[in-house]
Image (tube, rainbow, N blue to C red):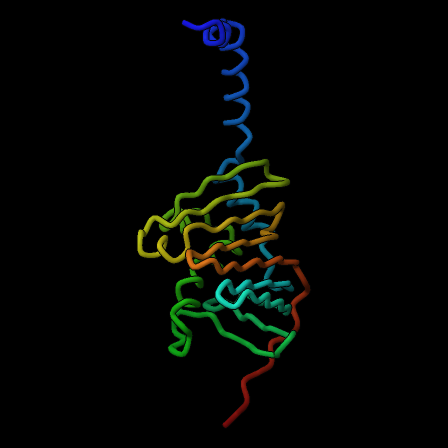
Length: 189
């Protein structure tokens, strides 16, 4: 045993290390409590600031807009730089595959449904209920080959989503709750 390992094996140091490890283990918020908090404070509507980095083109694409959660869909309205509206729902046949893959993730995150997330991701949380973060690692190796992980953080609500894609692309979204605007009635044919 070297003098260094002998000093590290001292009972007082081992005790201090075990206390630190226990404190760190307690630092992660309880998934059930976090899920309940997010579900209670989940905004029906909000605004977003989004930044998409396209690695192949070395191009940064900022955008902003609003979102609204409906019973079976998430309406994602981009206001700048171009006005678009996407209805993210399972029954939207025109939805590109990438959006279709993200739909359950986005709705589960916004609703605070950690159980649904844990069906598809290994979820590791850190922090406390007032300031938490989580790393989501896909359980499906095919998804992980494209999207190795998602980082999320927030307080009472989900505030930030960071996705790092295997090809070097990145997507960062900052969310802010907002008052819902009335949904326009469908136009009669």
